[in-house]
Image: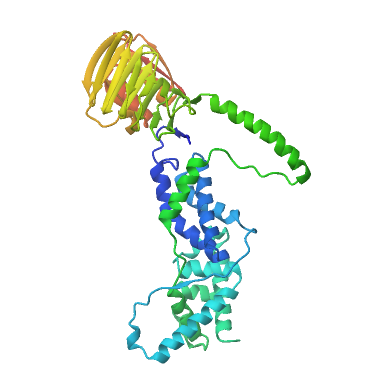
Length: 176
Length: 303
């Protein structure tokens, strides 16, 4: 129940500082959560990974500088359940459309729904790393550089994955 | 087309020519639709407040590290029995022991006690308390300097060589160095005992005993001690205590030559900027200093 932190004098901007730590959590927890979810389709595990990654950060707060903290939690998250979890079905939600559906013809709306169903099925069939990369880019708006950092690979490898993901999605949807 | 052109297209990195060619291809329409449809997808709902709460709970419980057991399963039972005996006795032993937290030069510590009272320990200081009996006896022994934020509850006592401070729930700072005892009250009311005397100290007041003499009562204008905001502050304090504090904060060995260490010093010095701190001490007192590695010499120039 007793928490003791050692601090270095003069280190105001230190991960052990409650405010710095809380800010890091605010900024990065959602990305990590989504990242793990896209990989394994398991929300419970995604929560666990977020928690464990930040516990690790806390335990090592005196050794990790604030500018390294992001890549630290990314790396920890990546290593945590690497081969342990069995992937489940990734379920995605549809954002409420801003456009007025009533102006569209029923056929058009139908077609759109069908297309989305096809897309989801195709996403399900993508290899884990292509799906994760594609969704981080499309849903979370992450730049290739940042995904590369998360996955611990080069930007070029991320571009390859995006390229292959798009190619494979199109082939599945067009029924080739 | 360049390599990974689909990724380049998604990132708006295709040249105009390439884009024109790509748009003419029969696959383009499906690609466009995929991107459009995927943009309306959303990830799972992330309950950040809940995640934060779970994390805080976990951080509270977390004390030891988990070590993976080795796969020699048949030894596990024996190992578990032995571990249980050792664990139980260790648990009993540590539980009856007092907790001690010590800081070295240039270090500080943040301690949260079982009742959520907070202690901020300054450099070269030590507190000792019993975790087990904390809930019915809030006694803490202090050597050095600390700021206390006491949760409401039973009597809270800080014992030092220089005197004893008793409160019910408040914020106060205690500094007890060799020959120097100071208590500043920032909130509530504290009762200070030193020698045969007892003084009640309301918020905004401080008392100081230097070499056995009760010296001053001064009002505090700030709402927390200056060392918490990265500054050491002095008002008519003998120079030797100022230099001792400098040594504690920066972990730099201080020596002096031709100086009157009992002259009084009023001012403050930065706890983060060594050069600035040296200037702040030496300029008003008219002394010179030489800084060499981890040592500093303060001296007065011969007249």
